[in-house]
Length: 426
Image 1 (tube, one colour):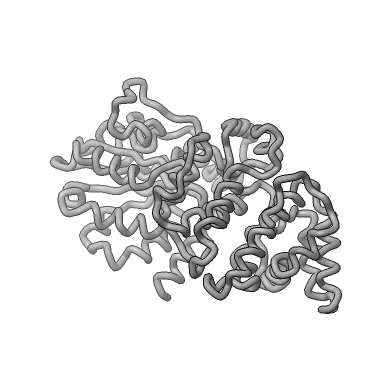
Image 2 (cartoon, rainbow, N blue to C red):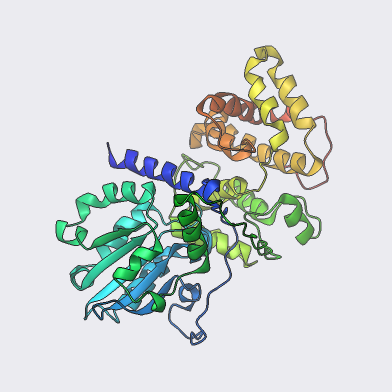
């Protein structure tokens, strides 16, 4: 099995972990968790932005007198709220204080999800960054609550990991297993990890899990753009129908990117994308000229659509859109027009704004190579998905066909309904 296949399998296993509702695993919020600040941690700390989350903690000594450092995945905020390059710097900064002597790491895996996990490329570069001085004096690495994701991840990294280092790794299925190795009472264990361990223990013993009230999610920032509804953004922006992030990316791409080959198909630096998301969520200005990469605003636009709590085309329209494949070819534009016309007013206005822009992009396909069909392959799954689970492979054809119709026949499909001024790009 190739490395790419293993990565895909690991991603599937991670999503299974998230969906394990029988274990009471909560869905991770798009919003950052409350910071777990040490009372002694000052804002002058060189890595305050990372350290304040409490991901890394010094936790006394193990039974051999070695310093213990804990890493808690449940305290990692969503990826677009945490600069993983800074996280790597903070890890090295912290370990540099202890690597001259023997030390131990306890890794609490519970809480790692698809929303807060670093990329595989980041994990690979991080492992390479930790040279001999870090690995030599690391005497033990305890992985608490390992899952299939961890085992697959181990398979991905096995070529990089020496046999000697591999012998230092110990898997602990339950917190109680740490007692034989560490001074358990000195450990800094997040409450979420303790509750998860209790649920695992109850399942092992055949007991029903105790009912635990899930704390209410933290309210989004007034300036939040990603992960909140169109209505929320409108209400916080004086009734403007088109979200600021959408208006700014579309305007920039219309001015400077229409003839860029492969627009919307190329990738950009992951950390750059996360940084821009953070700026938008904090209500700070973004100047795309600073990044010198036309693909950055293109990815930001796609990311915004993908992180909407409800798809732009709405859950209610999903089955109708899938049915487009069964409509006679000559009647498909009319059917598409009917489905779009029945959308809520706000969704319709934003969709018309977006499709108008993509129609303009497709007209420059001789330069950018992005025909209506190519654009549909990129945007289809960002516009519509089912309310439960993910779209099946069979759904891709009708979803992309519907999107292609909206782009190619934009003027016909969006001509029968009036929207407020300023929402059309034509």
